[in-house]
Amino acid sequence: MKTGAKAGNLTLLSEAELDRIYQASLDLLMDPGIYSESDVFLDIFEKGGAKVNWETRSIHVPPELVAWAIEQAPKSFILYGRNDPAMDLQIELGRVYYGMGGTSEPLFWDYEARRPRQPTKQDMINNTRVGHALENIDFVQTLCMSGDMPTSTIFFHDFDAILRNTTKPTVINILERPFTQRLLAMVAAASGGESVLREKPCALGIVTPITPLKIAVMNEGLIDAVQAGIPILYSPGPLMGATGPATVAGTVALTNAEVLFGVVLTQLVQPGAKVVLKPDTDVFDMRTTQVTYGSPEQDLGKVAMVQLAKRYGLPIYGLGGGVEAKLPDAEAAAEATLTLLLVSLAGMTMCQANGTLCFGQYGSPEMALICDEIIRHIKRILQGFEVNEDTLAVEVIRQVGYGGSFLGHPHTSRYFRKELFFPVLFKRQTVDEWLKAGGKTVDQVAHEKVLEILSKAGPVELPPGADAELDRALQEAIKEASGG
Image (tube, rainbow, N blue to C red; front, top):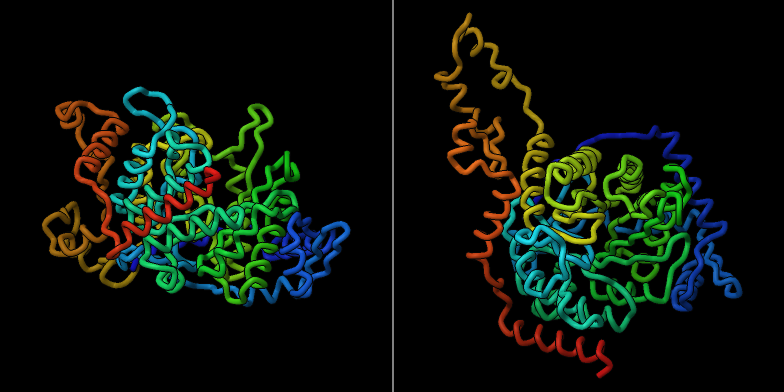
């Protein structure tokens, strides 16, 4: 099992400021409350003790119900590698994990052509195999989409590619109930059956309500996911200045209210259901109308939400290495480093979007390689250093004395491999060594590594009979999605 990197303790807000944000969120949950398109959700909350107005379709959640739900939600659980214990993740505050990709991106960065293009299912397969091979990628999501498949079936082909090519945990889309049921059937097939999936869930289910303050019929698949044992990522995403207030504090208060609503909903469906906070404190760029991936305001919001998650004791998931840069270059590396370091120091439990470019419009396996190296560096920072009599080395310093060298001292040979960081992708070379090796840029080195990985990679081993069962589940999903 992976235990994750040690989370940092970066804080932004005082306890009094956190109190004010939390109270503002509770006030919003009572007035105006959450509008529900779904009769099912109205009924669940009414039976659960909330005030429900069927005429206005509004749900008003009292503070005591919020407190109850936070208490019920597990503070720690295992997200399993699919039939692969080495890929299990202990999900809880105090640990940090890193994921490749995000939701299905519409394009793919073609390294040879130097431009984005429509992706194929083979691109999905290749990207998944790269993510599976990367040491510092703990969970794998889509880095493009199966764009050569019929639109109504793309998601099913995407997850067929993921389930066949990595044993690392993933994140599946939770939408309408029939769609969700078909997708859950695929995950169960690849896991070895519904009972195995329920006992050892290998995927998180992402639920995206309509912000501000609205939940849709489209979100009803949450019920099936909870019943199948899938931990829920409840993912509201107010856009600061558009679908959220034009202030960081207001956007955080709104996002926190909506994500707490998701915690209450999961616990009303099934007390003790696993849930991970996924509050997206997004920013609407007024000049470009794009949703930012690397703005300071977005990062401030994420740090604030991590502090709130620590109050609740609940794990939290959010944007880490995603960037606004258009190709895997210096801008992309700088943006990824800033966001990854910040959320890691804050203590984000799960950091996703590594390898994505251009506001999440497309992904690049070369960028995933670069993020893997950045994460390797950050993990060393999070590891910190030990202070004791031996590491302080006072006697060693005295022994070496004035103007001496520590190179030959036994203390150095005992510690340098443990204390010193050695990069893998970012080579430490002299200029002559670099020129002799071809004078390559880091994206060129990353591309060569991608080709090397793909030359050796293949599908992962599935449980006995799972190959045919997964294909059957895929074909049934395609048939239903195609209206057959």
